[in-house]
Image (cartoon, rainbow over all chains, first blue to last red; front, side, top):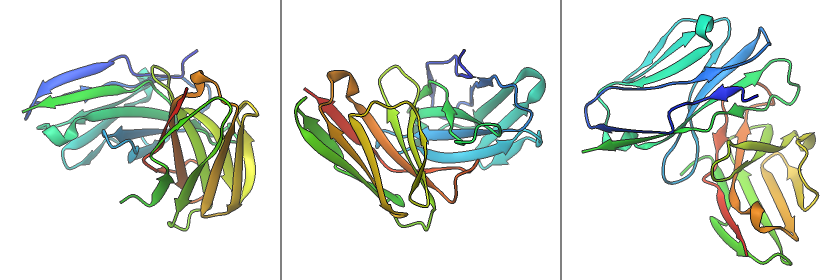
Length: 116
Length: 113
């Protein structure tokens, strides 16, 4: 069973629109970590945020904000006033404390296209 | 320029060739990783190294052979690959093995012909 689901394969918005990228995860572990990464066309994944399962406080960083809701197993990412430079593939990922390899389980990604 | 450098950026190889991918990090990190990114599949962990010791081999075929001579360098040796091995191979590092955010390289785009 897929543990991280990003149901939106591709989203297209016009510059300055707000956009929310959805992430739903599945785990039986009570301690886990959630991540978001951005992959621009250059290829490297850029770390955006890490959230542990005991911290449900929402976070805002500039135009980026994250909404973590354990009740719905979701960790959604919102970009406010989107810009063309936000165009990239965004990945949500899960790391489970019981996994001794600490591997990241990635979702399939959401491609965001911000049009001028 | 990222803190993790991968070379080459692109590689085309025949099924009988032997080649190596190189990864280098100057971040002082103790853990390094190889991930595979194929079209239409989620990123897959291949190998994990902590202080030059392999701590995870995620059921990867033996035609992929990792090497970590020191904590700054990681190699992926390739031999007798198949066309389905064509993918973007990403190297990453983190402070230690754990639930940390990784720093990724830009990847090597491998095409097996």
